[in-house]
Image 1 (spheres, one colour):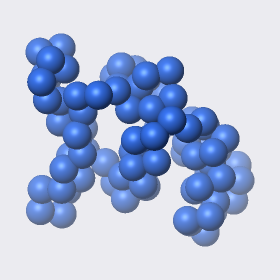
Image 2 (cartoon, helix red, strand yellow; image 1 turned 60 degrees about the vertical axis):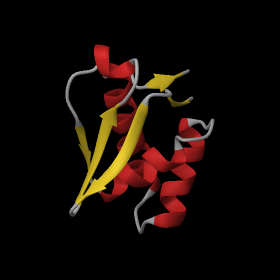
Image 3 (cartoon, rainbow, N blue to C red; image 1 turned 120 degrees about the horizontal axis):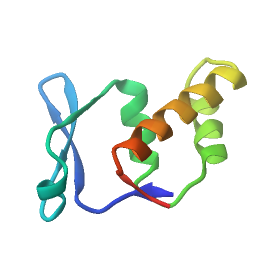
Image 4 (cartoon, rainbow, N blue to C red; image 1 turned 45 degrees about the vertical axis):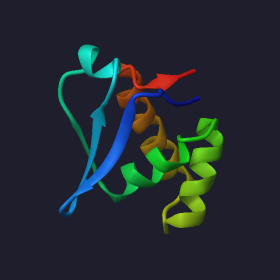
Amino acid sequence: MKIKNGFLLRQVGSQNIVVAVGDESRDFNGIIRLNETGRFLWEKLQTETTESALTGAMLLEYDIDGATAETDVADFIATLREAKLLNE
């Protein structure tokens, strides 16, 4: 899975904002704000990856346990799926 074309991450002040551009801007109205962890996962999703790989990356980057990493990744992916931001 990876982020669909047409969605960009921008930093506006201290905020991490995802916006739709091009054709995607007709179907997606709004913005998504990401915290530091969301930004980290978004950047990993710029290339094809798996939930397992994202969980592993979280464990390497942050001082968290495996269960927390799995839950955080699953929740983030579910949010992206609901917003239809992923190519799978």
